[in-house]
Amino acid sequence: MKKQMSVFSLLLLFFVFMAGIGASIAAGQVFEGREKQLVTVGGMVIAFVTSTILMKQQRVRDFLGSRPVLWFLFLFNAGVATGCYFLLDGVKGIAAAAGMGLVSLGAGAGLLKSPRKKPAHA
Image 1 (cartoon, helix red, strand yellow):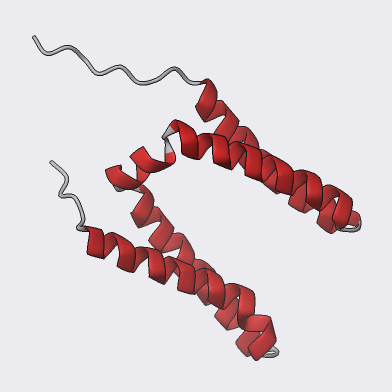
Image 2 (cartoon, rainbow, N blue to C red):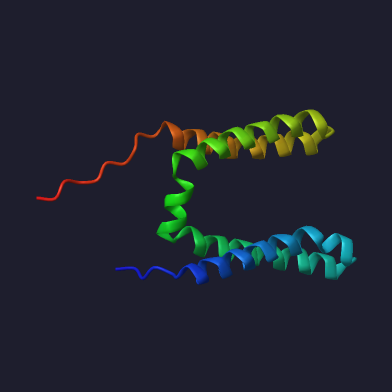
């Protein structure tokens, strides 16, 4: 049986994840050249590893699989995808719209799934 992480551990992992995302985004404002590349890649690796650990936790999976969260993800990402297509120029706009559109479609597919039924105990 898997041991559940405490709420404190989940929050700590979440903040480390956000620090990794922040480092990868803000590296261009602080560093130049090789250092910028190292901080960007390091932040991406930290974010990837912590998000993988977080997604293995049942609490997080239950929260992200709930219908209100799926509706929010579907509508928000669809709106952002539309905005990216019209507000960003060229390939960047198309790529951002495609990426956000895929996230929106994933949330929409989660909405179409029938709710999980718990097995009856015999």
